[in-house]
Length: 519
Image 1: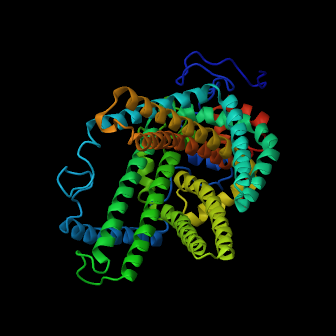
Image 2 (image 1 turned 180 degrees about the horizontal axis):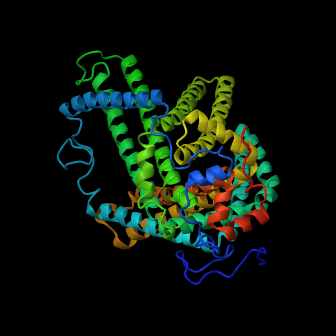
Image 3 (image 1 turned 90 degrees about the horizontal axis):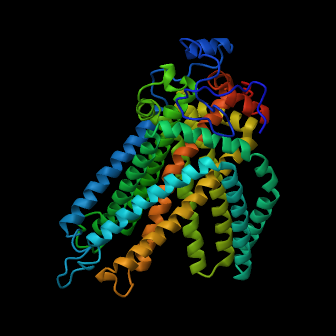
């Protein structure tokens, strides 16, 4: 591989280890000494004083109306949940379940024993190990694996298309025929952009290797969302028991309308809160290790904060929480609308009304496409919020300007990284399922003598594997998008921090490293 004219042999002492292809001395200490006492005010002034201050947002709470609304709905959910669960427990709602082995009990006392718990713990450990190995392999063979996953994605679309035609599901067959054709025609465009996506992927992997807290942030967010899911499930169950007419726990205000209204509110609250938690993790990573590396450089410059993710979480969960809640609310409303359209489609099918069912299906697909685009758009908006402390509307405007200027590169870049991580997650899920099956077969627990629990445990093993892989992968995706935003907003900083990396990107993709003009 030929190097750009500015290339120099890597230094012997590199904080980030030996150089690796395709970007020698990728982002360790630049070949030239770092500028002394670098600060963002000076850099902004040299840029014309029009780009604002980075990592120095004004100490004010943005989008305070949506912050108050978010807190109010969360408190409302907690109040309804407390009333419902208290009545449910008082009425014996926590009895049975896993079973106590007595007459009239539910479940069985030996199925979910310590053997099963150990199995699921071992599957989780295996999934985490496999996920780490997959990321290491992808770091070493990024371009090759991206090519393979791109081809696999095209073959999957073709396979689904053929399957739908075979079973005569014509509406789905037509949609996936269009998707399959688009994926085939776009192959060469995607392939030509693999070098940039692989380059950014490798950089983010190396940053994450030296800031392992990025994976801790992703895992904590996953655990919080899992706890929310359990809380929501118990709340919905208790709500049915507490307010359903003729229920033993019903004491007042019992009606089907009350149940429906409360379930709708609980679902809305759960979706909104869950999305805020996930987006808060994105903002923490973007404003933490990834953004700090981009704007402050490696630790040896003595300007990187000691705990960048912790300080970023503090900003995101206070000053910017209203902005994150604002963007999450838009997606939540679209998700609720999609759920209502799905219910309408199911009711139309049950009533034998194919035209109404087809119209509801088309509307559901349309809303789903809009929701997906807004989710993609919002990810960049949250990064703008995390890096620069902007309110949501300002961040959305700047994100629109970024995507209009770099739309194809951003979309293809994220798609390639996302496909690579998603296929890896499915592979890890299958290997975890295989591990669960082999464990059952060779340990032969007594409760599974006839194999009746094998499908359930294998399914749980698959889901655990996919979840672990996607959790770790989400941290990498956030880093790739963060560096892409930095390249659009302040490319000159990367030129100072890592001139060799900047030169390689500029040589291959000159437009990517041009600052986006202000409007």
